[in-house]
Length: 465
Figure 1 (cartoon, rainbow, N blue to C red):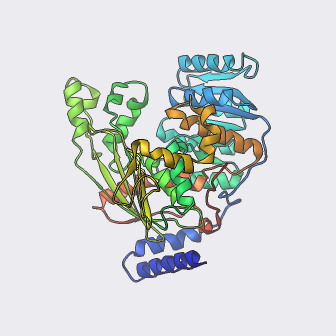
Figure 2 (cartoon, helix red, strand yellow):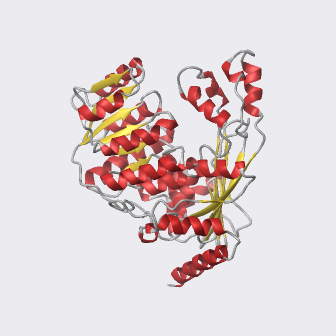
Figure 3 (cartoon, rainbow, N blue to C red):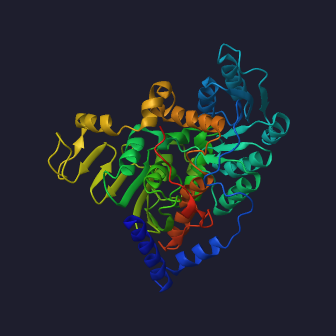
């Protein structure tokens, strides 16, 4: 009760302060969004009817989509029914892979669509799958997800779930109207350390939560070699045309789950954002391509590094960074600070008040490297223990397979998915909100409440065994 009373006090105090003039934009946005009616069914804890066999179609199999298809097809009770892609060679390649899974006995008569960019719509009409996996250009995510749900299928979408706030609201409306899931496939939430940190936070190991740090810092200039086809052929245009944090969810998703954001305990409040000068992409293009090349004709507007600060309803803070340009090692930061200790990533390390028995004496020393074995033994997430051996050969060290396993498991057993539509939209909203804040000199921007106030009744994600 003390924690509940404290949270209510902080939340009321925060809103009262905003009403006095320190942050009126947050209060106004919160009030207006809460008055927006639920069109059909609130989807926060929604469990769809069980699917004994999950019949899946795949839109986009150039890279990520093919990996999803391959592991999905190995799971019991699944059927690959259709594949759609712009390019015939992609469709034929992954159609052949699908046909061979299970010694060619389970995935038969797969409908293949390629060429016209609208044939995915024909696929939805003709095949009528149960679920559709969408791994395409970011700008296609929202229209494809919305049409998928309207045609009676659950939509599983690569990150980000959409590009604009308007698209995110349209996705929420479509999900509520059709009672179909729309899950953004944030695979990082299934990494070993992220799962262990979630378990430790839920057990109160680091006390009350105060602050988090999240990032996607991944030097990807080499993708510019994808000049006519592939990720770089369209992603490079985003770097040139947009200025903000364009890819926030890999770092933000896990810390949002630690903090129970959009789930009963707390929610996103506002964000301020700043970008560095845009220098790296222009310099890279000048160095690696001739003057007349199309990459040298772009006016790169997006800063090389973006730093944003999120303030939650309870007053917690989250620093979110993004940089796909600078020459530096990969990191997602993955830091969560509490009143009794800190958990941090890249490299993984832990410091607790009073130390860790048998390892450190106090919080002035990190538990790291080989010393972490004692913490893995005690706090490894039960989901990781159950699924690691089954999924470790899938992409990204096993996290892709664990995510896919859980999607299928939830659909077959009529359980809520681990990530709901409101989380996917809230995490993705950092991109357009940060762009607006940067354009306005770092002015605070209020997060839309896609739940329309229902987050306060939405159960936190449990420690799934």
